[in-house]
Length: 73
Image 1: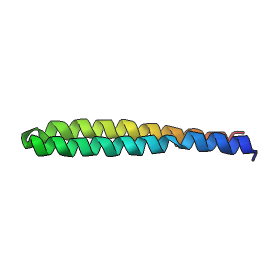
Image 2: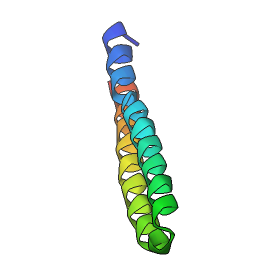
Image 3: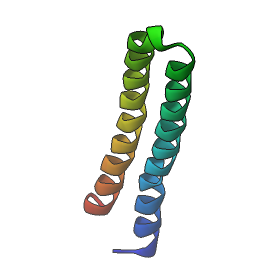
Image 4: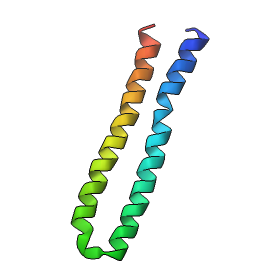
């Protein structure tokens, strides 16, 4: 495996860092919102789960691209 392939795969997998940070920030804001307005917990939870799913999908896409770069050279 060449060095450039390894660097490309590593850069593709770095999307997981952004997704992790984004999910952490979203979760903290959702907890704050629920603490301020407990009666809106259902709506806040639905929006949080949708946002987390989209962020996690981005990380999975980056992981798959990293694998494709390694094995499809």
